Length: 365
Image (cartoon, rainbow, N blue to C red; front, side, top):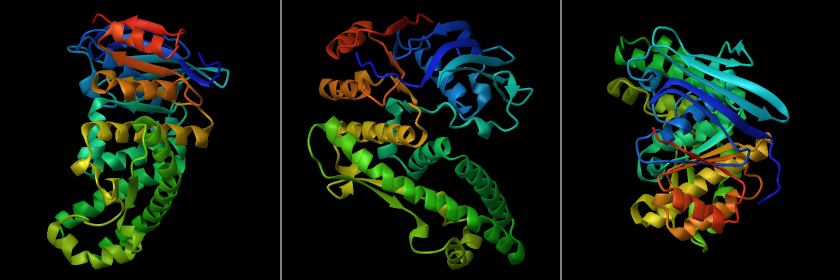
């Protein structure tokens, strides 16, 4: 077992009316926790509750009300963290009749965004394979989630950009030749877009070498992989961009160009990975993306994010599992949460990786 001491750990989690839990109280190991049980008993729900207290929202559901236990009026998640030798209490409360409330040490946040980045985390789920296989929105989310945990200004500017973009699109949907108001939106959006673009460029410069390192480690061989950041702002300023697309935007009733269309391509031998990569190579891509995200957050914040691994061992071959276990058992990886259906497999995995200090929580629903 590695003696590395990390500086962020979730000690306790108390769930009330959250998803399938009427009430549950979990105490966690500072390094390694495995939640085992059959499908449908609520292992993933525990991980999602941890995601809530880390970043004030679900990993899976866009609507908070869908996480309230059936026939209940609210949910409440209470948690206790050790952070840099300080003890913090984080509570998340939601009722469909009121707005979501987040408290740190019994003080309510005036804005949920103030919480983001204080208790960083990285979540890996089998569904994340859509990062490679599906459209640009998923990949933008990865960039934005990473940068939002690193830079409060980035998150604030992104929120305002999206609000103004919505207003611009609303104007285009009901356009009555008000080009003055359209230009006003352009002028307000432009500095926000430039800041977000600059941060994303810097992010990719630092992210790409980390991704390459983890891909090679997991795949066990040197394959020509790459990520290519794609943006309309590579060749145009935001204002030039919108000037060129003005008639098209009016015709289509939406803003067709800008940083809200940014993407990155996942390339294998300079070809799109989603087209030519094997299932195993795609899984190596996914793990490398998430581990690079983890490493970059650590390097920027000095905190070891919580690492949440949801039901991934049954989707990976033994070789990749062994490589992953070796990686996460070493610095800078700190507290880890794993969910799995097979208790024997988990115990064998830990034994093979010489992990003798962990907590196994059997979830029975």
